[in-house]
Length: 208
Image (cartoon, rainbow, N blue to C red):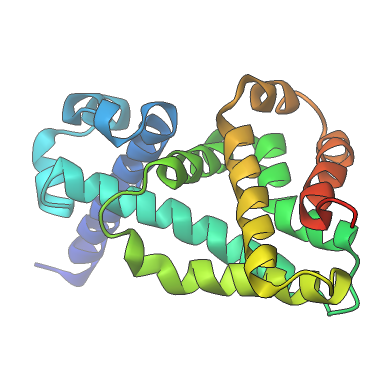
C-alpha cells in the first residue's frame, strides 16, 4: 500500500476515534456511565459498533478513556492556573484561578462544558481506575493549600485540604445544578463576578 493511502487511512481512523470520544463525553456529561448505551454513542458519532470494538475494545473502555480525558483536561487546566500564583496571592486571586476552568467552560458551552459536567459526575460517583489520576488530584490540591496556608495561617493542613475539597465539590455541583445552566447564559465576566467571592468564602472559612 502506498504511503499516502496509509496516511489517509490513519487520519480517517483518528477522526473516527475522536468523534466517538466526543459523542461519549457529551452523553456521559448528561447521564453518567450507567445511562449511556453503545447504540446511542455510535448513532451520535455516525459510526458503527465495529469502530468501537476496533478503537477501544468495548463500551466500558470507551467510556473510561472519555472520563480520563475529561479529568486530565480539567486537572491540567486547574494546575496550570493555580501554579502561576505566588504565596503572596490573595484568597480572591486563588479563588479566581481555582474557578477559572469552570468559568471558561460555562461561558464556552459545548465540549468544554461537557468536560466539566463529566468531571462533576465522576466526582460524585468515582469510576474504577480513578486512582490512576491520584497524583494529579494531589498536585492540584497541594498547590491550592500552599496559597491558602499563607492566607489562613491559623488553620492546619487537614482543615485547609477540607476547604479545598469543599470548594471543588461546590464547583462540581454548579456544573450539574439548574443554577449552572442559568449561569451558562451569562458572559464570563458576570459568572466570575458572582462565583469568585463564593469560592473565596469557602477558602476563608468562618472567622475565629
